[in-house]
Image (cartoon, rainbow, N blue to C red; front, top):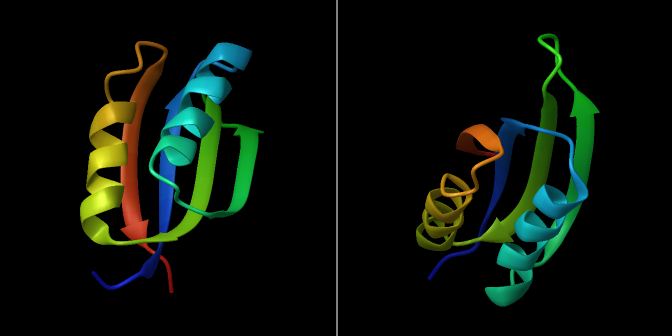
Length: 81
């Protein structure tokens, strides 16, 4: 299991419970987060951007679980450079 740096980007509502659910997913899987950024996007939604070192398999699991969060409209990941 090779660790790589990934960036997960999600768009949705800016609510404390959404932020809590996202961070809980990373804590449950023991994935160390390098940075977490929350900002306003162009269309009024909030953008959650998380950089972490993990295997791609774990990141795919996290993204799939984040897709189940009702207040998030889209979730995607990319390998960080």
